[in-house]
Image 1 (cartoon, rainbow, N blue to C red):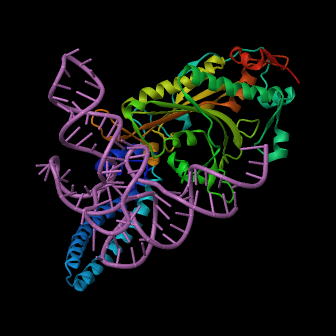
Image 2: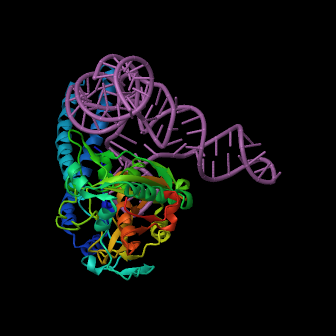
Image 3: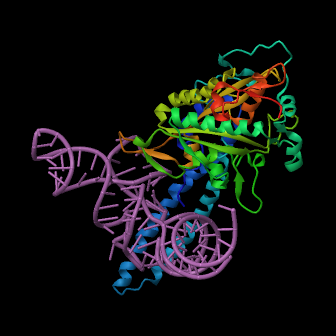
Amino acid sequence: MCYHPPAMLDLKHVYEHLDEVRERLGRRGNLGGLEALLPLYEQRRTLIPKLEGLRSRRKVQSEAIGKVQKAGGDVEAEKAKVRELAGEIARLESELQDVEARLHAAALLVPNLPHESVPKGMGPEDNPVVRVWGEKPTCNFEPRDHSDLGETLGILDPKAGAKLAGARFVVSRGLGARLERALINFMLDLQTREHGYLEILPPFMVKRDSMIGTGQLPKFEEDMFKVEGWDHFLVPTAEVPLTNLLREELLSEEDLPIKYTAYTPCFRKEAGSYGKDVKGIIRQHQFNKVEIVRFCTPETSYVHLEELLGNAEEVLRRLGLHYRVVALCTGDLGFSSAKTYDLEVWLPGQNEYKEISSCSNFEAFQARRANIRYRRKADRKTDFVHTLNGSALAVGRTVVAILEQYQQADGSVRVPEALRPYLDGLDRITRC
RNA sequence: GGAGAGGUGGCUGAGCGGCCGAAAGCACCCGCCUUGAAAGCGGGCCCCGUCGAAAGGCGGGCGGGGGUUCGAAUCCCUCCCUCUCCGCCA
């Protein structure tokens, strides 16, 4: 019967700062969820004191009955009275339960508040470029597209993928498969050896609670692959298992920050993306990714966001891949995120920059959903941690970028220096 | 898949119808002692909600949900999870 801290935003805080919250959610262009929630919150607030008064009376009278009974007195009349009281309580309880269930459902649909530093805008075209690293590789020939290169080199086989699993699946073979594996190892080594992340190898399917904890559910269920006959979902990103690793935990401040990294395949239906990125392997139902996540105190989370972004950027820099950083504007921000940077890698074959990583600070949004807290050193009180995560990187798209940026006139592809130790010193991919 | 055992505070673990939000220990915090520390001693210390300016009051929470009862951590039902043994299997 207790009000388990439900969702996302701190409702009390929302209520006490309504105008500000309205204004900030308005920047996202999403106010509906909030307005649906407010009358329910009101109802709850009038119901609770009423109920508590009755329960208090019941408690006192029950105790009295016990005492009288022990002394051998007659208590039947009193019992009847309390029975009546209990009926009243039960009615109010079920009313409250109903209100709270609807409040909870409504609360889960309200997105996070954007941080003040998030640029205002409507959509992707309004995302400012924060910085650009490297330069577009120059070549004296018409750059080919990765699917063209991949098929010619015999390392990417979308037809085989379709045969086995259908559209938007691919089979990597030979050096293609090895390249993918080399990249995973390279990325994990970098994050664990140099950036202090603890490597985790989690389950690739998780329970519903975990999906709610990080915000994929209930809103995006249709994008997820659900396991038939089970209440399990294939992970859409390692963010889900990594963040939920600390679900329901009470940490101490000295434990923070905590940094995890994991490789997992990621499974997404990508509903609503029909016709987008149909060519090649840019958008797949299954792709590999190395993820980095951090848990930290609220005061430090924006410093951690910059660091985490740097950790992801370092992968691209070591690989010598030209990219840029954009800050997502309020209209393009993901549901759970307070602030997000995207890394966009240059793809000469597409003649555009394409998202290869997304680095976000969720502040307390996920922590509140997943109930991840810590005890503050100063006053010994508990508070929600802040959670962050980023791709470092999407491996399939890294393969795409390498193929396209490192391609040679003869159709072969040079291997980035940093990757050669992972490929027995191989410096060039040629037809196999 | 079969057979048992169990899920209680940050942790370990007692309690098995009212005096239990819960013994004890550990951890943690404050103080005394000490040159400092440890040990020892004294005190404090669960979470959430709700009312309140605050002090504080009140309510709820002993895996989740439901039931019995004047009253449930304690009894009943149900679901989930963990552990042990057997079987099967990479």
